[in-house]
Length: 518
Image 1 (tube, rainbow, N blue to C red):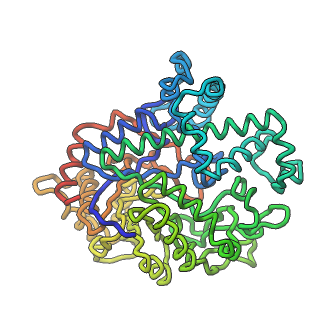
Image 2 (tube, one colour):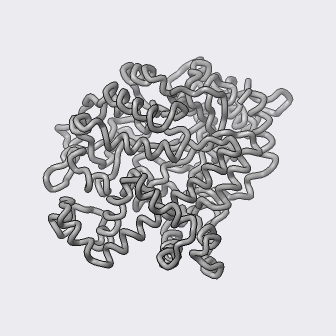
Image 3 (cartoon, rainbow, N blue to C red):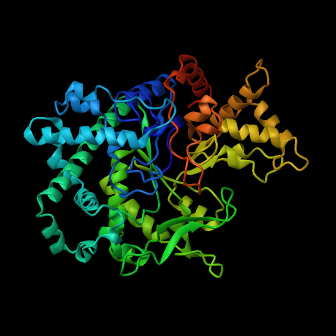
């Protein structure tokens, strides 16, 4: 299950891609970015979850852990398939250059996707028709997802606990049959199935394109799901919910570096005993679906499989929360048997083992040879005079930062400012000397070369897979930060200005990639 090759790559969300109006898509902008990675000698492309985003644009609180967000669909491909006309793409606003405009993108695309669906129903001769029946057969999750979307439209909310029909709310099969006898509801469900088929066809096209360039796609499985999701509606027994569908306990973490007061994720906890009793069937289906989209997959919040933090549904000063045992070995024994027989031996699961870990978490990780993750920005917290990068394991993913950290440029500014404090947090003199060692001989020591020194330091580390957020390679400020954990607003909207993808940058990255044997 471990990393077998020494490679490097880039973290770049689909939403952040340039080349399409308002928001990144699976179209030419994605292929151009893959070409750029190839020119720069990179062999991995990590993205954020492609699940439907929530009202705060987060892909980690989705209405479906299986489905993809139609906002990423490429409309130009629908023109090529004859489901839209060229004039359908005229007049679409471009939106801001460095931010995704999700609401505008959704409005624009849904109008045209409805038109494409109408054309789809009137003909039988496109690649999407060829894929439709196969996809429905191979993706058993799409039926419940399409039903959930249709019912959410009918009742005006994705919070299924507020649906007025009690039997529908309880996913009673007779009640659902009655509701889906209504033509509008049935048509809506077929439309949402169509959207998932279109995404799947376009995703497979991009995946094949990346394979030809020898670029592996790296995905992500958020550990928890949203309470307002098809997953909880259709599988209520798998979660810690009461008879009305309300959460009895919620997921979160105690105080950490991001939030001194801890984080409440407002996501339902799993009933692991029920999952175990049915052989973790929902999880196997979930992991299998993601591994069919990606070559490597990051297991978000890996600690939660060893032990998870259980918090009261409402803040309670007398109940700060507690750690409880997760499914651990029993879960992963089952998962890996499934992966080997249905996906194949080349699939890789990456343990997101960040934060304060007890020895049991690392023992669980190492038992299955899961690669862990090392983040440069985290390695020098509370350390004195030690080069943390030398301790990184070969079987690990190493990076300058993640989607949850500030940009490397902003972090370095903190370090430079910190050294002037009376009681600095870091041993700045040692840290800066360590970075200077990675600056090529003859280069001046300044802020820019210090940034590149960090990137070279990570490239030169033992970790077999090195990943760099695109913002870090570009030296962008904190305004380009992707996410600030625990803060609901202002996240997930950064978008790449394609003029920054210069030949000079690609050549530099390629040169260093070769230098450090990646």
